Image (cartoon, rainbow, N blue to C red; front, side, top):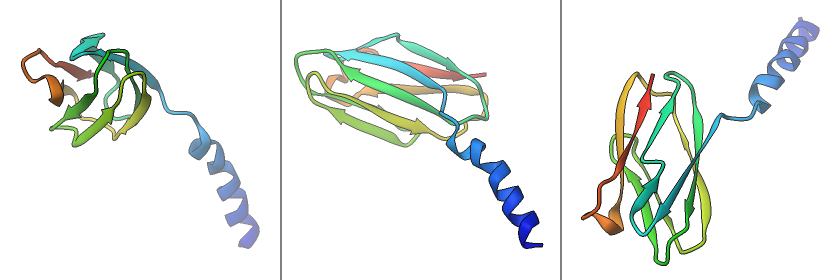
Length: 106
């Protein structure tokens, strides 16, 4: 019984260590590039966020319950839980006068 448990645990290891799909998003003084991302529904993924502007930015999404503040020149990431199909908006809280973007889960 113990051997069976160990074998099953070893078979599951590659799934735990598999890298997450990754998408890149740059913010320059409130402007997002690209303004939208298309991701597969039902799968965790990572968004690498780069602040290429002159001032601080805050990547924020209320429907995704995520926010990340980045100083000028800083790169960071957020991991997003599996999404149901749909559109999820995001914005730069420090530049509310500018349009945000969205993630489309398909």
